[in-house]
Each structure stands twice: as C-alpha cells, then as structure tokens.
Image 1 (tube, helix red, strand yellow):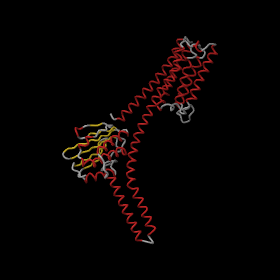
Image 2 (tube, helix red, strand yellow):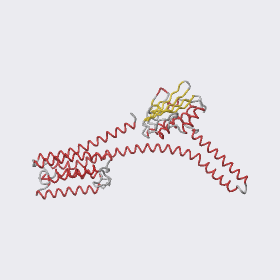
Image 3 (tube, one colour):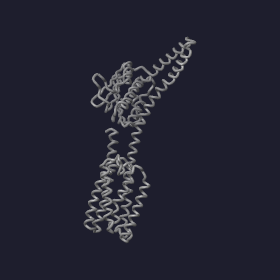
Image 4 (cartoon, helix red, strand yellow):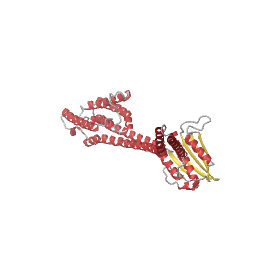
Length: 420
C-alpha cells in the first residue's frame, strides 16, 4: 500500500475514533440523567418525558457531531444562518428543544433539579466548541452565568441548597467537569491531526514549487543577461541607424549573435547539458515525489537492492558506468517532472538494470492524466520528452514513453560507452 493511501486510512480511522468517543460521551451523560430519573423515584410522566427527550437529544447530537469533522470552532452554523442547510437548522432546534424540555420538567423535582440541567449544559458547551467566531471566552462566561443562575433559582424554588438537593454531589460535580473537558480534548486531538495533514500537504506543494522555481531560476540565469544585451544593442542600432549605418549594423549583428547564443544555451538547458549526478537526481526524485504524496520506490543494479521513498542511500547507482550518469540523470529528472505535472500519481517506481553492455532505466507511475489518442504516445509527450529522446538516440540509445493499462511508463536504454 502506498504512503498516501496509508495516511488517508489513518485519518479515516482517527476521525472514526473521535466520532465514536464523542458519541460515547453523549450517551454516558444522557444515560445518567435517565438513571437519576428512575433512582429518585420521579413521577412516571417525568420519567417518560426525560427518557424520550434524552433519546431525541442523543439522536440529533449524534448527527450534528459529524460537524466536528472540520475541527474546533468549525462546526455548527448559527441557527438562522441563511447559508446553513434546513436539516442542520431543524436538528439544532430539536436539540435545544429537547434539552430545554428536560431542564423544565426536572426543575420542579428536588432530586433531579441539578442532573436535569446536564443536557442544557451539554448544548452550551458543544456550541461553545463549535462557534466559528471562536468567542469561547464569551461562551464560557455565559455558561458559568447560566449554571450559577440555575443553581440559585432552583435553590430558591425548593428552599434548599444545591448540595442538599443532590444525592451524589461528587458524582454530579465530576460529570459537570467531565463533559466539557473531555469533549474539548477529543475534538482538540482531531483538530491537531487536521493541522498535521494540512502541513503534510503544504510540504508536498512546497517541494513541487521549489522544483519549479529551480527550473525557472536556471532559465532566468541563461536568458536574463542575453535579453538585456539584446535590448541595449537594438536600442543603440535604432539611435545610430541614420547617422552611422555601419555602427548600427555592427550593433544589430551583435544583437543577433546574442540571440543565437541565448537560443543555444536555452536549448542546452532543455536538453540538460549541465552536469548532473545520477545519485543526486535519484535522491531528489524520491524526496520530491514523496513530499508530493507519491509512494516512490527505487531499485538499483547491484544485488537488485530496493530502497524506500525516504532512503538516502543510493550508492548502488555507482555500479552504473560513469559515462552514462549524466544522460540517465536527465531521464530521471524528466520522468519526475512528468509525474508531477501530468498525472495525479499516488505510486511511482524507478528501476535500473545493467546487462549486455546496456543500462536500462524504467520509470512508472499510476493515474496518468489521460489515455493516449491513436497514433500518439500520451499527453505526457511534450517538448521535454521529445528533446530528451533526441539526446538518447544521438548517444546510440532508445527512449520510449507509453501507457500500459492504468500506468504511464518511460523507459530508456543507454549504452555503457556513452561519451562524456
């Protein structure tokens, strides 16, 4: 299984763990409310009302808790948000209604007055952790204010203290602190996982951007100076054309030479005449592809050793004859560039063998951009591969680019006696 699939499976498993943990927390608190209704010998109508409202609240919050998949403070929209869907608004209203019903009917029973406020506390804490405006301080102050007001009001109704009305004060206090703390830790853990996943994707995008900037920098270094000289020479030719045609012709000739030189150096860059190291190209290819979320494996000649996508050991590339290093390095670079630009690959492999005086290099990747049309190689085949094919053929080798099933394959065969 490739690395990207493993990461995605891990994220799905983590979210499933988070969601189940939230559900278990909801069920635990609501089950305690129902249990207290039976334990305190509340009237039958109150037990039935509390049980039905608790079941309804459990169902609605189970559905709404899926909103936590976006992380902290990216959950429930405002009740009257015009952009919110009608189902979410309906479930939100039902949740608040069920919590308020439990609070209202238990307010008149001394043994249930504190426990009956748990569902309302759940709603307040849950909305605090889901409010996109992140005004958690205001929410926290509001929740504490509501709890104090509830305690004072219920004590005034029953002419007793909160501790006297609670059969198990330590258990009640524990549950009151358990829900907000546990809910925050569960969702915070998931939020951290989301941030790490975003950082991983950003790292892959950054690696691709750096590679593009490197190519752009090489092109700028080659053409920048020549274009400046050409602009200067043509401007001088324009100024001296009428007064001194001979000088103007000299400037135009020099401008043409600069243009020719710029074309030659640009062509050299495209064909990869610059010195490269095969080991470095293999290492860069594996690192760049891995950072982009592609599971890359490299298999080198000596002993058929295979190295993972994060391996830094490519000494077996030394078994490839040195004269072939530069040309094969260009093949590796072009293959890597094509994978990044022209596919949505999740898996790639680079395989190199030496036999019969020929070095063979094969680069494969899945999920190519599109299937090749009749008579064409594929969408991958652009000026890069065409120019590289000319280089390989000129060296007495062969280069093919083809599509096999759902894979794109670029293979090169280069003689060991390639001239340096």
